[in-house]
Image (cartoon, rainbow, N blue to C red; front, side, top):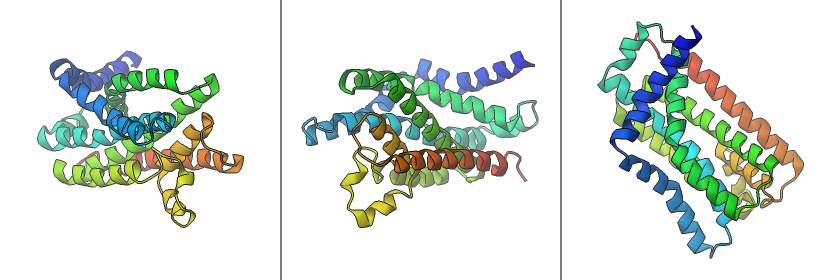
Length: 247
């Protein structure tokens, strides 16, 4: 049974991303260039003073964008290829399918993470504890983004509808919140709006862990509680409310 489960997970990874990497390697460059593009813009605009902030932001954005992109893959497989209808009648459960497809996105993000990890090691002073903290934040960011993507993919009528919605979500979660800059740069009356986005808490934790953001311990620990709570809530919601079987 354990071997069967691993085979099902590997099949999801192989079908969704390994095939794409092998046959269309140019896709890797497009994935790598997106966070690096933001990083370079911030580097030149700030004359290098915000490079450490930009690297942290790129790590968070990579996990967010890869999680959001899962929606397009799943909707295509469901609507265009009818794969979900075939899987419903198979031994593969929704949780296994969701897990396998999520792992495939992590595999696809490896080149990005390697490049950004090297840059972080060179330009950002990261301790072992900071590294563990950043990895945990990245995983939690990935969890809430893939959970939202999976739910949208099972209820959207076509890939354009779902992609349009997730594009708005990406804009609201990656561009407006203080992912590539410090939250203290936002004027206080408008700062409260930033707290509506879970990526704000991802950025606060990551920036605090490497010593570039000065906030109280209460806000730091509260950010952990909110980020974990949002991630787990969206994960449970996606598993419970996603439309796995067509009605």
